[in-house]
Amino acid sequence: MTAKIRLYVDQPLGQGQTVPLDRDQAHYLFGVMRQGVGDLVALFNGRDGEWQAEIRQAGKRGGELICLSQSRPLQMPPDLWLLFAPIKKARTDFIVEKAAEMGAARILPVQTDFTNAERIRQDRLQAHAIEAAEQCGGTFVPLVEDLQPLGRVLDAWPGDRQLMFCDEAQVGARRGLAGAARGPWAILIGPEGGFSEAERSRLSALPFAHVVSLGPRILRADTAAVAAMTLWQQALGDWAAEERP
Ligand code: SAH
Image (cartoon, rainbow, N blue to C red; front, side, top):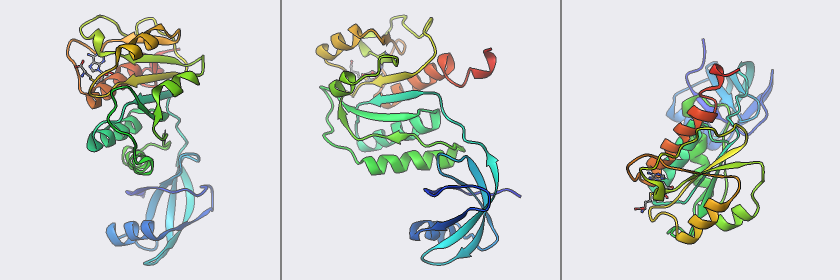
């Protein structure tokens, strides 16, 4: 028998390791999901893969599990960052959730010239990434960074990381990822208002930037994020891994 419920925990996981549950986790497992002593739960912490664990104690305010065996090794996503300008709350949540499902390794909300949001709830967005990983069978959880100005992120850019700059000014152009090399990458998606001319000229001139079009229509930022990750995964990411030597 394998567990139906997957739960993210902070604690280390390993053979015979006991895992204490906090109040919220206990409420979820025993109150909401109606699990009890002897039932199996799949645990992951983003580092040690997925473990089948048995419930040893179940209480209102806590509980304890014990790890029995590893059911999946840690599977790292490709080294892909998603940079995006936060938009309305529900759409920002959507972007973070999809980035975790699609296999981004790190999520960086960035403030651009036309970004409306002044702040984000980093903790809430991180919780969305965890939920997405629980749901999609992931064993890794991407880190969601706090909001930073795009200029500052570019100032500190690691020179070996290529950037897929999705520029709405390229709408309808034939500019994709053909010929691009594998390695560390990032995708950049702008806000509803798009990029300013100053940003566009700085970004286009960066030696590590690839200016890309996402087809003949202007996509909303949340759609654009998913479309860009799909293109990248297909061309350079782990979707294509098995076909290549
Ligand atoms: N208001 C802008 C559109 C912004 S769309 C305008 O009307 O021009 C939000 C973001 O999605 C853009 O900044 C870009 O990163 C991405 N995007 C949407 N459609 C795109 C396309 N066809 N090609 C490249 N990027 C696109």
